Picture 1 (tube, rainbow, N blue to C red):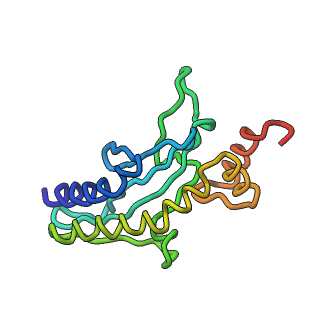
Picture 2: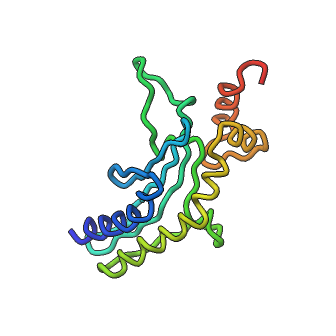
Picture 3: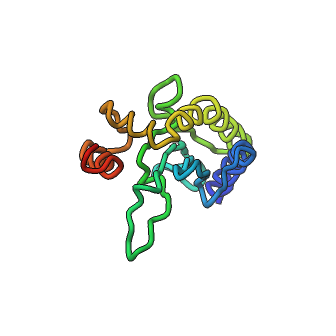
Length: 166
C-alpha cells in the first residue's frame, strides 16, 4: 500500500506545479492542449518497484491531433506511449541520461515530486514549448531527429503532414 501512497504524493506535488500552467490530470498523466498539439507529462513506475519502495521517472511527450489514428471514425485519444515526440525528463536535464528516483517514505515522495516539478519547469516545458507548433515539429523531423520514433514512423508522419508535394 505504501507504493500507491508514495505515487499519489509525487503526483499531488506535480499537480501543484502543473495545474497553474493549464495542465489537467488523469491517472498519472498531465496534459494540456496547445492548438492541436497535446503536451504530456507522465509518471512511470519501474517494474522493479515493490510494495515498500516505488521507483519513478517522468516521460514528456507531444501528440499531434492531426496525426491521430482514426479507428471506426473516431480519432484516438492522446497517450504518452503513442506520442509523436517523447523523451524522459533525465534526457532533457543536464545529466542527459535516464534518471529514476527511489521513494521509500513520505518525505522522499514529497521531495521527489518537488524535484521532478523543478526539472519539468526548467528543462522539459521550455523544450515542449519550442516544439509546440506543427512547423517546429516538421523542422525537427526534417533535421533527422525524431525522439521516441523510428525513422519509418518519422517519415510516415512527415508525409502525412506535408502531403505528396512535401
